[in-house]
Amino acid sequence: MDLLTWLRRDAQLKKMVVVIVFIALFLDHMLLSVVVPILPSYLYITDQASSTTSGNNTGSTVSPAIIQSLKNRSGILDSTFATPHQSPALSSDPTMASRPPDSNCSGAGAELDAVNIKVGLLLASKPGVQLIINPLIGSLTDRIGYHIPLCAGFCIIISAATLFAFSSSYILLLLVRSVQGVGGSCLSVAGMGMLADVYKDGKERGHAMSISFIGLSLGLIVGAPFGSVMYQFVGKMAPFLVLAVIAVLGGGLHFLIFQPSQVQTKMGKGTPLLTLLKDPYILIAAGAICFTTMVVATIEAALPIWMMKTMCPSKWQLGIVFLPDSLSYLIATNVCGYLSQKLSGSWLSACIGMILAGITTISFGFSKTIYHVIVLNAFIGFSVGTVDSSIMPLMGYLVDLRYVPVYGTVYAIADVALCIGFCVGPVIAGPIVAWIGFPWLMAIIGTVNIIFAPLCVFLFSPPQREEQSLITKEH
Image (spheres, rainbow, N blue to C red):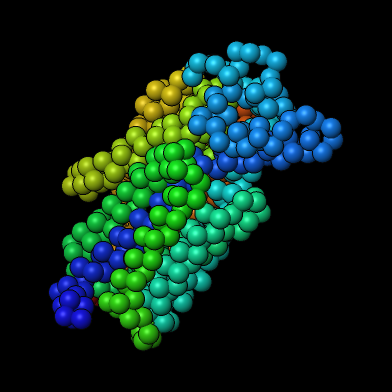
């Protein structure tokens, strides 16, 4: 108890807020990304096993042992895809089981296109729910404080991770992913609000938020590689159970230190949401966040299946290819964010980042090997990190310049822009790939970013609103 008493002192309590929010953002984004390399392979194997079982019931000679071996392949179906309703072991082509990694594994293209749509809907369900829940959680935190929603968020993430581990049907996975959106909204909105409330000084607040965003970046970095390696060598349940344990520790630490039971006073009133949504400069900034996020979300949804069809990777490779993306994002958010603020070139950094993201996205359609994908993912992470680290502080500056300096609503808009990108990207990825193919999908998303990029020029020197200018002169 002496340790808890020491941690509850004011000096340590502020540091513990950073630790708790760090853990919260890390958990939410690690659970967000850990499923990316697992879902395509798992859903395809499940569908194939169901089809094979159905074939057995109609006179097929495939045995249950073969079905089980299908589930236990160390590679993505042993780096091969057989014809529908047929086990690779029974294929008439004796070379299929020994295809090299760079072979064209398009024998199950139709089935993979169907899986692509399922994966897209599954990935989009979480940000879709979060998009709806965010305004409600924001209003709730203004009325009862941050600790109770944060505690609820940890509990929901624990439940979601545990259910992910034991879920086998697509409907249940979709439901659990949607529930995770509620937990993610509680953690992100309450966590960032609590940081802003505890750290009143602008420099301290910026430093505390940058540390918390490192947790977000680390969650994205670790999630996909951790999920793919654990899935191949331990099993589907393992990564989710590990996350559930981490969530228990983080939630327990928050509960012991802060004891969320008291209702906090209502916070100051900021600018109405509709007023900010009518501001063209805020809309341009939010659009930049949305479209670059859509790049990441689309690639996460469509790339693994594209690799399965054209490159025959192992399960662990499906996650490792996203590691450079996250590492370069972490570098960009620290380096480019600092430079853009020091040189007052946030608009230029955002413009360059969007153009780079667009060109790199188009290049994905021409990738032939895993090494090409790794290099392109590194450029994607750097470009998206450049945009995020430039636009996020700029949105706060726009509120300072043009409205009442209360930041909750404008950052709620930023989070909504993120959610729209993460929601729309996976939803459109599956149908477009099935209709015109993966290269055209990448060309469309990349072109949209290149076309939008010049609008960032308007963020060079945004004018002060007349009402705000009068208030400033009076003071």
